[in-house]
Image (cartoon, rainbow, N blue to C red; front, side, top):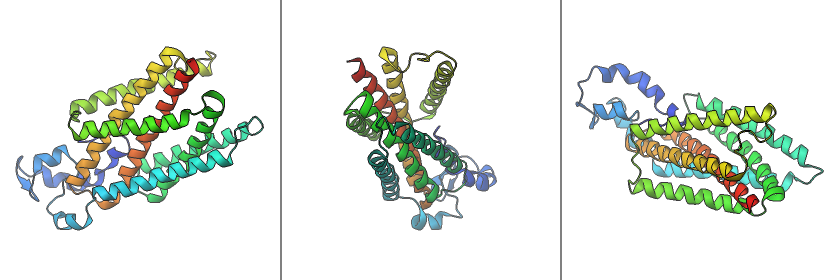
Length: 284
C-alpha cells in the first residue's frame, strides 16, 4: 500500500527497482521468505529471499518510529518555543521577526524537498527541517496569539493532539479502511484543495484583497475544516505505511522517514486547526 504523502512514497523505491525482475519471474501466489508474492506487489516492503536473514536484525520496529518521531516533533516544539521567546512580535520588531520566519519557512521547504527526493533518509536534513519549521511556527503562533486571538495557540495544540488521537483510535479499531480507493479519493481531494489554495493566493496577489474568501467568515471555517479532514486522512495513510513497514521488514533507518512524514502531516493539521479557531474566535 503506497500513500499519497510525498515523503512516504519514497519508501521502498530502491527495493522495487532492485527486485522487480526477481518477482516478475515468480508465479503469482508463490511464497518468498514466508510471504506471498502478491503481497509484495501490494506492499513495497516485503523482503526477498536474499534479505530475509537480515530482516530480524535490521528491520524497523514501532519503537524506532516512536523514538525518531519524538525527536523530530521535539525539535519542532523546542525551536517554536525559542522563537516565540527570542523573536518578539511587537510593533517595533514584527517586520524583522516575520521576515526571519518566512526565511525559515523557505529553508524548511527546501530541506523537505531535498529529503523527499533522496533515496535514503538523512537525519541531519530531517532534524534541520524540523528546526526551521519550528521557527516559522513559533513566530506565526506568537503573532496570531498577540494580534488576532489570545490563547488560541494552546487550543490549536490540544486540537491537533485530539485529531491525531481520534485518527489513531479509528485506524486501530478499523473504522477507517485504508485501501486503494481511499488513497485515490484522498489524492483527488488534496489536489482540488491545493488548486483552490493557489487560486486564492493569485486572487489576493492581483487585487482581490480577501482572495476567494477563505480567510474569514463561514466560508473560511468550512475551508479550514476541509483542510483538517484532509490532514486526518493523510495521517491515516501514514499510519498504514508505518504499519506495513514494520510488518514487512523495512530497513531500520527508514524510521526517520516515518518521523518526517508524520511530522509534516501534524504540522499541516496544526496550521488548519489554528486557522479555524482564529476565524471562529474573531467572528465571536
